Each structure stands twice: as C-alpha cells, then as structure tokens.
Image (tube, rainbow, N blue to C red; front, side, top):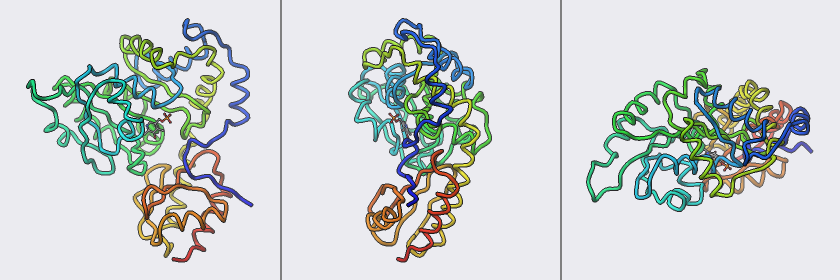
Length: 339
Ligand SMILES: *Cc1c(COP(=O)(O)O)cnc(C)c1O
C-alpha cells in the first residue's frame, strides 16, 4: 500500500547524497570552535542572508529562544502575533528563559503590519514593561504557510528602528517564503537583527537550525547556548547535512508548493470539505464537513497520515519525501471521500 506522511515537513529522512555528505564531514570540538564543518555552515548561512555571523543549534526552538534572550532584558515585553511559534509551541520559554512578557496581536493569518504594532509599543512609564523586541514568523505556520513580502517587512523594520526595538525573524520556513515571493535571502539581512533558519523542515536535514545576527550578538548567543545545554562537540556530522540541504534542497521547494496546489484543488472540489484556506507554500489547512478525526481515520485507512488543528480542521504539509505518485494517490483518495 502507498503511504503518505503529511503530518509535518519534519518527518523527512536524509537522502543518500545527504548521508554521504554526513559520513565524510571533517569535524572537531565545536565548543573550542574547531569543527570546520559547523564553521562552514555558520558562515555560509550568514553570507546567504547578508548577516555577519551565525550559530548552529540543535533546534529552531533553541535559536528562537537564544535570540529572544539576546535581544531583551528581564522585565521587558516582546510583540508577536497570537499564533506565533515562539509563544505557542516553545513551552513557555519566553517567560522561563528570558523573564519577558508577551504582547499578542491578531494578524491576518499571522501577518502583522506596522500599524498594528505601533499602538502596542509601551510608552516609557514605570508601570509598563519596556517593549524591546518584535518577532515575525515567515512563513506563518499556524497561518497555513502565509508569507510576508519584503514590502510588508520594511515598514515594520523602520518602525522598530525609530522606536529602538529589535526585530527577530522566526524563519523556520523562510526558504518556502522566498520560493513563493521570488525574493532573495540576501535582502533580509538589512531588516532583521536576528534570523532563525530551520534546516530540518522542508530542507530535509535530520536536525539543526542556525541563528544569524551581528558578531557581538552571536558571541553572546554562544554563552546562552552553553547555558541551555546546546554546546555540541563533533556535530559537524549533522552540520554537513545542513550544508547539503542549503546546496541541494532549496530549489526543489517549488515542487512541494506545486504538490500543495494540486492537492488543494482536489480538496476544493470535494463534498467532504467545507473550505480550503489560501495555499501559498507547502502547508494546506482545510475545514471538513464531518469532524476532522473521522476524516483523518478514513485517510489513514488509505495510508495517508495527517493531523487536525481543530475539531473541523486538518493540516497537510508537503515535503521532499512526498513524490508525484503519492500526490496522485492523495488526490484519488480525496476524490473518493463522501461527506
Ligand atoms: C518547527 C518550527 C520552529 C522550530 O521548531 P523545532 O522543532 O524546535 O526545530 C520554529 N518556528 C516555527 C514557525 C516552526 O514551524
């Protein structure tokens, strides 16, 4: 039976080429700064985004949490959309790691504007926490893979500069956003103080994220990473997968996006589906007529695995281990669903 795992783009396995790159990596003790593969990955990613430096971490949660720690002081407040991964899915780490409170806004599919942010910046007053950081997410995970364009980011970056706030990008799926907008990674560096990039989502590495920022920030980030227990040793074997992913798995993201559009069309035509949210990248959110769990069971019986995000909502995520014949199977099964 054909099986298709659409639960997340984190389920991918290393390709033979990636495994080969991992096996042949030159490594050293990274806590001493001696792992040349990690150094190469950090430099490569920083250069790609027009940033000064980078730090390799086990997860995107860690890169985000380190960034928040670097860009705030205890008692400060950060601003983010109410769907933000840094708030919802990082275990309350903002409060725990940084002793910072969070001001949540209601963006459109998680996308914020400078006009939404400006009134939420606290005035200088002893009663108010000091607003010191804005966090954007691109693409927005909970927003169904919605993208910011640089035109939308620019006014937010300008506002942050005027008001002395730092701006961090949770770019777990930044390459999906760049694939959709056609913009260049290198243009991102001038707008953000920090950028977090996941190598283990659509890019297909088994583990790892990089945080990019200026040299001073990354120097401090190494301290914070150590405190969090994230100082790794010969992790160049893993970083090699990240380099391989940047070299070989960015271009192909457009295939995942095309697959998402094909499946979204099939969903839109199905009587079992009440609504398909706009699809921009590799994530599809759709509402089911029957309870989502019932639909998930029917899909699972046909080898298709996905997750619900609400009682009547299901999420499909496309990735490099979903091939055309599997997409065909998904379309066929969707066509056979009755409500
Ligand atoms: C997956 C993800 C992260 C990082 O998650 P880890 O599992 O810790 O690597 C951060 N932000 C967003 C939006 C994500 O989807």
